[in-house]
Image 1: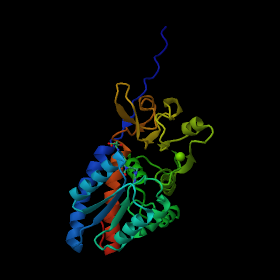
Image 2: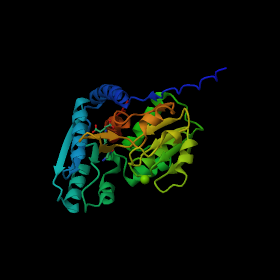
Image 3: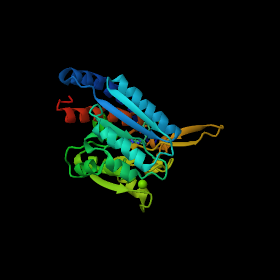
Image 4: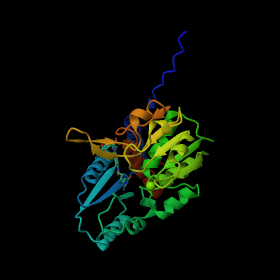
Length: 301
Ligand SMILES: Nc1nc2c(c(=O)[nH]1)N[C@@H](CN(C=O)c1ccc(C(=O)N[C@@H](CCC(=O)O)C(=O)O)cc1)CN2
Ligand SMILES: [Mg+2]
């Protein structure tokens, strides 16, 4: 008698971040139009780019273009790599005082020797649409209303979009950066998840991953998370964006999760590209409208 065949692995649901971001951006355009009608104010975003990092230049251009596409004003400040700390601080302070600017974003990473922490601390917390200021990080940690960093906010919105119940679930965040890992953990805690934060020095990372119902990875190590580290049916959100050799003389972008392996085990997974990345800019635009509403006193809805 033949042994009964092994159950075939069910392919994971692929979470289309590009489509979710596009739908949210379209809805945002309506909300911006309503806000302009009610208040007479056009929300304004100032984007600051220092130096000539090619990827940063692309992101900044996309931010400005999408900002204008939803009916908000965008101002780009492109400064040479040799800009001094004092010059950059002076620009941030000028933008803090500018009544037409509701959101300020300093594109990261900043070139050496600029002191990133000091620059981010200089941004008016009410205009801090990246959510990187200590005031917003503190508010988030206390579970109070805050401007929330765009990438983790985008991850949370993707989880909501999936309709997965988060309360009581075991969530593992791999990566402890100020931009993603730490705020992500705070957001999941606010959703009543049981949250663990791991990082590149964590022991037994594979075992920690296998326990997670929700796995969020943001470490910048291509393919770190293997398929057999994933709990069958888990939701996997891959924040990594790593450019690697494509073996044919060019390059391609991959995440921190070994996608082909993971897609046979996970219940749902974000691709790279086309997963979390597009949500970052969508959330930035939403944060800008929220900041404008808070500053001008009109509702953002
Ligand atoms: N001030 C900030 N600096 C940086 C942030 C940030 O949120 N605020 N995040 C990243 C860069 N970033 C936006 O700034 C960003 C990265 C990637 C993507 C994206 O859509 N990626 C694509 C793939 C790459 C590509 O198409 O070029 C994807 O994942 O599909 C958007 C925004 C660091 N700096
Ligand atoms: Mg880390």
